[in-house]
Length: 228
Image 1: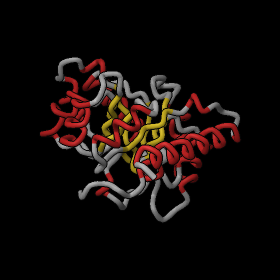
Image 2 (image 1 turned 90 degrees about the horizontal axis):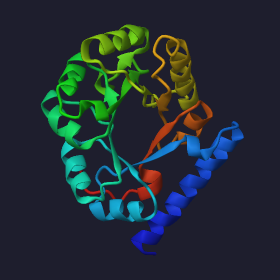
Image 3 (image 1 turned 30 degrees about the vertical axis):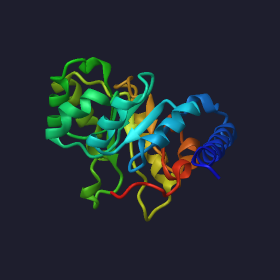
Image 4 (image 1 turned 135 degrees about the vertical axis):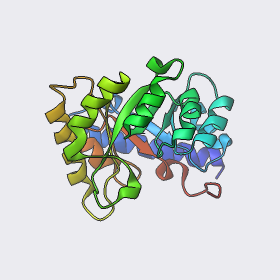
C-alpha cells in the first residue's frame, strides 16, 4: 500500500468515527475541527493530508512548525500545542494562527507585543493533573483569576480551554470537568466558546463532552514519524 493510500484510509476511518461520535450526542461533524498533528512526520505527509482536504495542522515544536508552514500552501491553518518557551514566542507567533497552550501571563504579554497579534487565537491550557507540573497548564481553581488577569494585562480574550486527559484516570471524566469549567466561566468570559480536547486515543469521549477541536496524530499518520 502506498503512503498516500495508507493516510487516506486512516483519515477516512477517523472522519467516520468523528461523525458517529458527533451524531450519537446530537451534534454534527461540521462542529468539530480536526487538527492533524504532524509532529515528527515529513512534509510529504503534510502535503498528502492537504491534498485530501485537511487544512488544520498541529505542531508541538516551533522549529518544525515554522519549516513546514513555510513550504505548504497559504490556505492552511497552523496550531501550536506544545509548551511555550519565552525565547520562541516571536517565532511561534510568525507561523501559528492558533495557540493552544497559553498558561502564563508573562507569555501572554510577550505575544501581545507581536505584529498582527490580533490575528492570533488563544486557548488557555488547563492542567487536570496538579501533581504533573511538567505537563503545564493553569489549575482549575486558578482559572477564573488567570483569565481575568489575562485580559487585563495583555488584551487577550481566549477563545476556549484546552486540556490533555490524565493518563491514569478516565478521559471522559476529565473532559467533563473541562466542560463544566467552561459553563461556569462563560457568563463572565463569553469568548470561551471552544474546547480543545481529545487525541487519537480518546477523541470520541472528547466529542461526547463537547470538544470543538480535536488533535489527532497517530490514528491518521501511524507510527512512521521521524526520530524526535
